Length: 436
Ligand code: PLP
Image 1 (cartoon, rainbow, N blue to C red):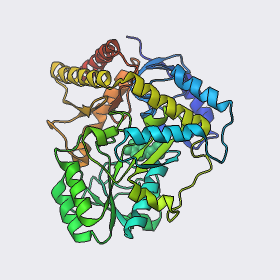
Image 2 (spheres, protein in one colour; image 1 turned 180 degrees about the vertical axis):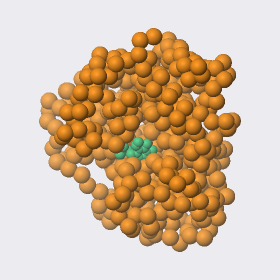
Image 3 (cartoon, rainbow, N blue to C red; image 1 turned 135 degrees about the vertical axis):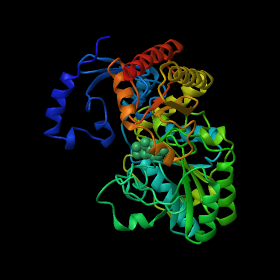
Image 4 (cartoon, rainbow, N blue to C red; image 1 turned 30 degrees about the vertical axis):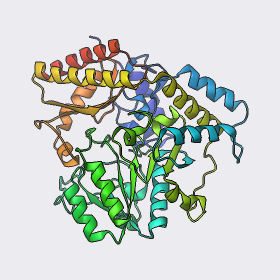
């Protein structure tokens, strides 16, 4: 099989490095194979780079493209509304329509504010929690990603020292230099999926705790579902101690269903955050919550602002996305394709003798190399063989299959069964090559 050539991208990268810091506009884009690549266009489940390489794309731009690349209805909606103007510094009808739809679909969305991205929406929810409770700190979990801003930029990278510390008092590793000193004092950190640890910590520190924030499924590391009763347990603890439960649905929102993970797991958070799939690639996010919590914003005790919030084209994209998802209900098919992909990959692991551990839920899959049979938290994920994963991902990439570098696969509403078969063929070749 012909391996892909990346020489044009390499040339563009040399040029880009002279103007963009390290040649990219987001840190994650550096970690492509074999280096940051440059793309020309995308259509449906396919993406094309400047070398003319075609990829069957399971990256979906790190998640947003739930309807694939260049969905004609999304592009048309954006174009139509853009022609009426970009931004009014005022309200417009589609914004209300979109909010009404979210209110209908998402159990906790009694009130809504739109922002630009997930990072901002997370910070809005945390500010609301601090304001309403009069408390300062929040509890978050190792391996969960809540954006790149200071107070959540810890506990997500692999510690260089390998040191994680005791489970009830993890070592807190910053992901970046330059974080404000105070930011490490804003939160408590624990391993995920362990209710006893949460109970212990909350019992001791509830006077300081404004919020518990969690991804409902730990999508950013291992794509690990919550243990039975874990989310419900968090709900109970939050109720008992007057703490906000915030679900970070930036990945799960509109991916696991129209009502997000909160619908799937029947868990009612106080607030939740949506981004990525909501806008099909356009910059829009939403912080939603129960009326009593969002009252902090409604009353202007909490300030939430943003010049670019709810701009016409982004609202149009979100409205079109949600309408298409409602009309076509692609979820049963996406879930079936996810099952097929995971089962196929597990079979390949057996056939090739590779220690490939496959996890995930619905249209999200994760592949890691591990001798474990199952994983439950970030510490389990840290033991994965990163060298093997890199080899596997590169081998697939060189054959036209694009998967997120940390082993994450997103299935869109436009992927087909034949494409899952094709992906499995490519994965088989890549695994077989690794064996020899
Ligand atoms: N929360 C989660 C669960 C995410 O996965 C991400 C991004 O990947 C964010 C928050 C931050 O969102 P954004 O990149 O839109 O700022």
